[in-house]
Each structure stands twice: as C-alpha cells, then as structure tokens.
Image (cartoon, rainbow, N blue to C red):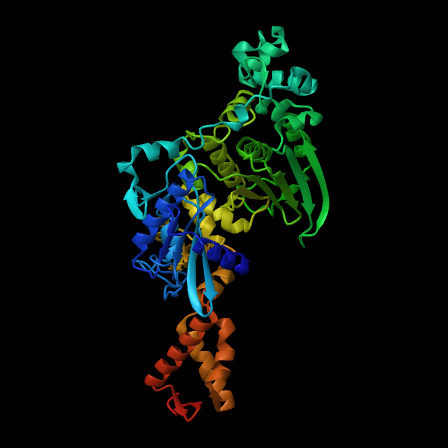
Amino acid sequence: MTDYFKNLVQQLLNEPNEQEWLEFKENFHGPEEIGERISALSNRACLCSKRYGYLIFGIKDDDQTIVGTTFEPKKQKTKGNEDLEFWLLTRLNPRIDFKIHELDFDGKRIILFEIPATSGSPVSFLHEAYIRVGSYTKKLKDYPGKAKKIWQSMSTDWSAEICHEATIQDLDPVAIATARQLFSRKNPRLAEEVPHWDDATFLNKARLTIQAKITHTAIVLLGLPESAHFINPAVAQITWILKGIDGIEKDYQHFYTPFLLAVDELYHKIRNLKYRYIVNGTLFPEEVDQYDPYIIREALSNAIAHQDYRIGGRITVVEKEDSTLTFQNYGSFLPVSIENVILGDTPEQKYRNTFLVNAMMQLNLIDTIGSGIRRMFLKQREKFFPMPDYTLANNRVQVKITGKVLSIEYARKLAELPDLSLKNIIALDQVQKNQLINDDDALELRKKGLIDGRKPNYCISADVAEHTDQKIEYLEMRGLDEKHYQALILEYLRKFGQVKRSKLEKLLLDKLPQVLNESKKINRIRNLMQKMHLNGLIKTEGKTWKITKLS
C-alpha cells in the first residue's frame, strides 16, 4: 500500500502546479491551518468531481521539489494534549474519513493527507466552511454560488429514477400482495379501500412507482429476481455468512430481489439462539433471544434503504458464533455522527435514497433514521447487552450487534443507577471497549464516580467495580498501591541479597497497570526505585541494588 501512495504522490507532482483540490506545504504551522485546509480541499474536490483532495507536506509549492518535512502527525499534540488526528476529526462537520500517510522518499519524510470529497453538504471546521479558490483558502460563505452547488451535489435521487422498459409484469405478485398487507397495517384508515385498488393504483399510492412508471425502488423492493438487470450496474444482493469463533466461514446464502421478501427469508436464516442469564435477583429474565427481532429487521432494512447502489457493492450480514451479528452496506453515513442521531432523537432531513426511504416507511419496513437507531440502542439496554457498535469508514456503514451480556453483575448494577442516562451508558460502554470518549462525557462519568484513570486510558471506577465481579479487571487496569510494589522489591532483596535493575523490571512488568505500555512501566519502576533510595530503603552498589540495614 505504501508503494501505491508513493506512486500517487509522483503522479500529483506531475501536475503543472497546485490545483484547487491539491495543495503542497513544506512544513507544519498549526492544527487550525490543517483543519481549514481539509475543509477547503474536501469542498473543492466535490466541485471538481474528484474523489479526493490532497494536502501534502514536504514539498515546495513554487517548484514542487521534494524537500522533506519534520512534521510527524502521529506524534503531534494540540492544546489540551489531544492527538492531532482525533482533534481534527472531532472539529470537522460532517466528519469525513480523511487518512494520513507517512512516506519516505530517499530519506525525506512526506506526509500525505487523503481527504474524501464531500457530497450533499459542505464540510466545515470549527463551524466555518472553507473553499479553495485558485491557490488560496477562502471562507465558503463569501462564495454562495459554490456553496449552492455543493448542497445540490447529491440532488439526483437514484431510487426515484425510472426503468423505462420495465412493466408491472416485472414485479413479483407475492411481493405486491405482501406490500398491500403492510401498507394497510401502516395506514389503517385506508385498509378498506386498498383491496379495491388495482396494482397500478396501489403502487402509486404506496409511492413505489411514479405515474405508473416502474422506479428503481419498485425493482429493489418488489422486482422478480430476473428483473434486476433493469437497475444495472447497481447490485441488488444481500449475502448472509455464518462464521465460527475462529472466523472461518461455515455457511452462506445469497438473497436477491424482491428485497421485501428477502428480509423475511434472511431473518429466518439467522440462528437466533436463546441467551440464558445466571439469575441472581429479579432484574433479569431467565432467558431471551440473543438478537431482538426488531433490531434484526431494523438493521437490515436500514442497510437496504441507505445502500449506495451506484457503487455496485452488496449488502452483507455476518453471523458469528461468538454471539455477534454484523450488518454492512456501502455508502457514507449521511447524519455523520451516531451520537447526534441517538441523543437528538430527531429524523434525518436528508437521505441518499429519498424515494426508497419514503416507500419503506409507507410499508412500515423502517422507522425514521433517528428513532429507529435510537430504539435499537434502547432494546440492547433493556437486555443489559452491549450497545451497537457503528463503524463509519471506507465509504461503508457497519453495525455490530452483540447478543450476550459482558458481565451480569456489572450490567445489573448499572441498571440500578436511577440517574444513568442513555448518553452515560453509551459513553461507559465505549470505556469498556477501550474506545475514545470526548472530554465532556469523561467529565460527566467521573463526576458520577463511574470511571477512573487519565485520558485516554480510562477504566471502570472502583465505586462501580466494588459492587461487581470486575474487581480483578479493575485492579489489572488501575494497578495496585505503590506500597505493594515496594514490598515485592524488599521481599526479593531479603531473599536474594542483591539484584540488577533488569531483574526487578522483569519481576514487576506484568504486575503494573495494563493501561501503561512497556516504556511507561519501565519508567515507573525506575521512579519507584529512586524514591525507595531517597527514603533509605534500598541502596545501589555499582550496577546492583541492595537492601539497607534500616529495612
């Protein structure tokens, strides 16, 4: 992959000069400057019909010679000691999955920022959107015409496009009959009228066709398998895969149009086993389904509704015997932030496939994107299961559902806390999974006594751990009292008389907190020994350490 990006840089150097989607810099000046450049290049790449914009450090912008840079983005910190990449990511709206590549050109470091072009919404940095005009970075608000074009960049709705050669005969009669039933349930006031509508009238009323013309939506939801050619090169396929705990594939099946029927077929394919709790108290049921039926259908229907069919990828559902179920579809997540969708609990105002989404809502296949996803989180909370894990990267949306409790006692105690909001649970869930949480969430969890530790190495607080079965895990993360380590050193010296520091490091390394890397553990051991030396507990003779007579 490194060779690919080195070749890419060589190709970009062949440009006659900087482009509005391509900028060269010699060295790093400040994080704010990079944030503004990312915003400007993403917005300009959209207008230039480029997949990416590029910001390259270590190259002169006047003659495009490679000079190298001292900039090390992976080590660069910002105010508040935040990592540069995370700091930038959390200040861009919508968040875009930019990548940083560190390359070597004959001993000269080159830093390449690969910045995806935005679509349908300008990218802003610290609440201000920028645009490249010539070789300058300007505020987008001063160029309303360019801003309008960005907002309109996704105005064409693929799902509403007409398949001019298709007719109602290309739709599955069983799927149409099923759609009638679903429509009647969703619209009970029309239930008596629906049976009297002919197919053409019903399809128009259900917003599956436009003036009796077959749309891409109608083919995806109701089309016969052989009618999928009408939407070429789009792919209408869902693949279910069963994997063992070792990740080896054990079974699979492909599902095709009509997706309206495929959802039910795939649902019954999933081995939704019973999960049995070790009952202790009254908070837990004796057993439940591993995966709530609502979550399976909502996650699958969301993948169908928001798939970017233009890309040509298929929807996948991976069931693993480690009690996880993962749904994946192609296309960026337009609301960008899962947290905002869940906690705001408001419907999204913009969809990739607006016509398809509206049709699926008419058939009661999906809730609005805000309430549907939020309800999935609440369903997991009701069972004390982990929160759904969303991965939004590489132009794909992936959601993993875990069908088991990580710790029954821990889950039970969290459920007993009366003031623990969904926001708190989501943040604490991220801490358990060793994921980054923002400063505001960390502060709130700390005030409630739910976490300990220093950023980014937070761990479950003793106030929670002492009531749960995670005392051992807490001690492994937080570490033991300093006196305990001193006692181990003194006991070793009393038994063996003397020791080299390397031996003591070997003795203590695996006993220190897991949140520390090896380098930090060694530094902590050295500091501990120096402190013991100053306190007169141990002394050094050459390269060996001995216990003092006072000890």
